[in-house]
Image (cartoon, rainbow, N blue to C red):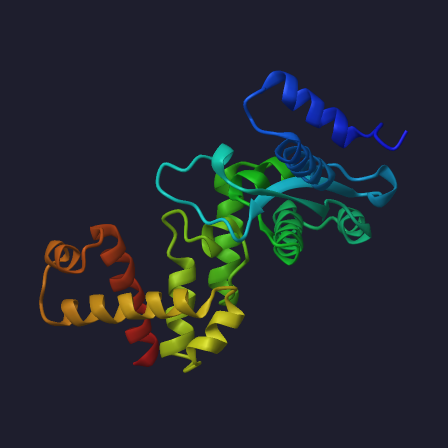
Length: 243
């Protein structure tokens, strides 16, 4: 009776389908690992409350890489509050759809981040039934207006072509005068990433002040011309603020 377990059933299935995988200890270990994944991805019904959903997000500790597909990325199940009393009241008060979508997007991104995972723009598009372009637009506009970074995959994992998080990090350092460790805490980045952005900004700015062209700067610093353009745009904004 002790041996009538799902773990042993999985081990037996592995043994019959993959006879060369290993002995009993390896089979039991594989079955145990499979069960761990299943338990993480399946939540008992009573643990999910009204308005909540179980969603697969990108593990914050598994950054992207070149040619790395979603199927090769580590996913983490998170419980998100898709609807709450505040959302219902907003409908009653005839709040604009833009404000409703933004509030939900901010809530979902922060809830996912607190559970050790990140939502992408594609996730927000699916969850809120809006286009990816619109989802990106409302969040980027919020970040520019508030000078804050919303913890999502494009900013934390440095994906996409947006310069919002670079801009905010450089502004906090050279306009607000904040220390790198304080910036790291406020922008959901580690100190190494903040130092990398600031160093790259300083190098691009120095080369640009020396009269080098965009192509020359990109070649010298071994980066793309588009990245150089982003940092120059940031520098021009910072110079204007300081003036």
